[in-house]
Length: 158
Image (cartoon, rainbow, N blue to C red; front, side, top):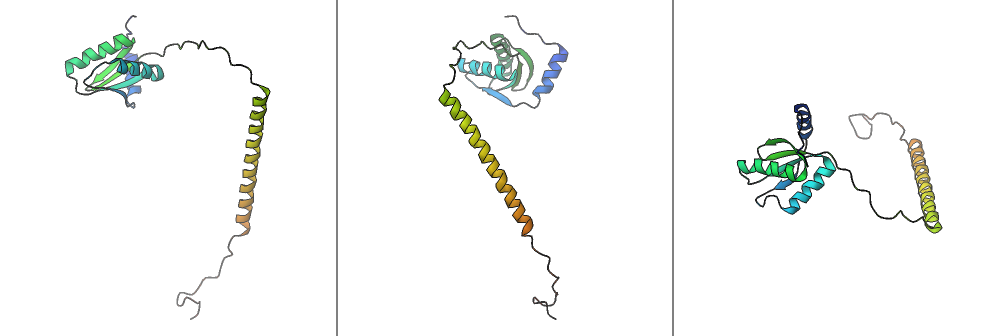
């Protein structure tokens, strides 16, 4: 596939979006293993824009690793700062599942779903009625104000 080229304006916008992101994949001494590539693919499909942390990899190897990732995953390099790589790729169209259409529900399942919904409505109404009753009782049982006590004695005397 042809390499994705970003314009400076696109790159600037993607760098701004990537600022708040945290690295989703960490690549260590083992490099680009099939599992790491699979995880990068999954992350790019889910988020489009990702950060990758590199640990224990020399400067020259980092640049080669970035171009290798982008070539294998048909992605565009956005930025490389120290041990952090920022990579972007537009989401790919997901293939439609080849499973057959779901069978129509049998009447018992539909009836039980309707019964479940009705029970949930009844429970919500009962809860609301209990809250209303509790609220009304709070307003009736408010303490009456008491006359101020004297400061000289706890009994209110002199």
